[in-house]
Amino acid sequence: MIPLNYYLILSAVLFSIGTAGVFVRRNLITILLSIEIMLNAVNLTFVAFGRALGSADGQIIVFFVMTVAAAEAAVGLAIVIGLFRHRESLNPATFTSLKW
Amino acid sequence: MTEAVAFYAFAAVAVVASLLVIAQRNPVYSVLLLIASFGALSGLYVLLEAPFVAVIQIIVYAGAIMVLFLFVVMLLNAPHEDTEYDERVHPLLRPGPMRFGASLALLLAGELWWALGRAGDSGRFPAGAVASVGAIGRSLFTDYAFAFEVTSILILVAMVGAVVLARRDPFDRSVVPQLEEEAQVASSFGAGGPAPPENRP
Picture 1 (cartoon, rainbow over the protein chains, first blue to last red):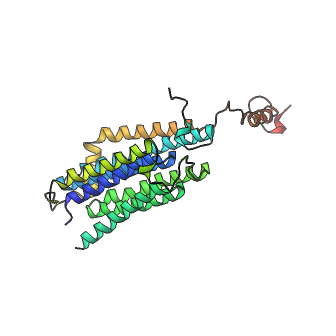
Picture 2 (cartoon, chains in turn cyan, orange):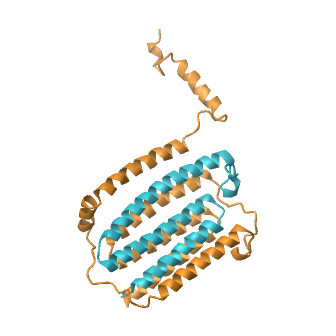
Picture 3 (cartoon, each protein chain N blue to C red):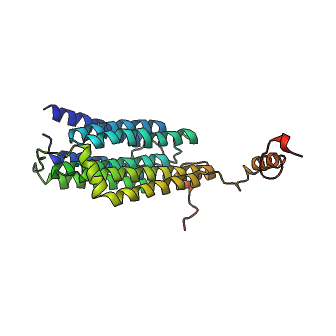
């Protein structure tokens, strides 16, 4: 039987990979993918804790997280398409109009 | 024993695929590797006796959200990342915010590892698990009914927002000649839109 800690460490590693991706990559789509990695790491934690506590709440919260992730992906990708139409680039350093 | 082997295999696939997602410069490969990572996570959900989550992980994440990403990547046709630094240089040696971000991520990984390693081997799972879809559905439609309904509003708002944001701007200069042409064609059929020619006086 795999202990709970192993799942939590795996989730932490995945979350760190996602964080590193957001900071290191210079492509809006890869940054959105890194956010998806982070959301999945959190989902794994929810399911593992729900299993450890013997309750279904963890799985239900994962359901809601997936819904929000779908909404976020749809709106985020629409914004990416709009930005690409304006500047012909996906590099976040290009979009500095709101920078003071 | 079998469970341990499966856990390590799925964990290795998830971590390696996630690392390759952020190491690729071509977003198409990134999306495909992320689908592999989601498949491994789905296997981990099966090991955690959560078959419902495992299945919706495949259907919703790998099937719907990732296809949306892939669609946008191919629509934009901008496969390669334009970088102002040398790709071969290690992230910790690159200038400015990238070095800061990479070291911050390493720090976060170390911190989490340290914090979780201190707890020892205490987190054993109890025997009984809530695995049935029926139990989840009952809880979803009674205790979480309000959140469930709010979710439907959220999806509706996201759908309308995505359509509005990705819509072609009618005042965009590059589209104006095309729109004028369409308007001319429409007005040649008389007021009130494109009526059939034989109905004109």
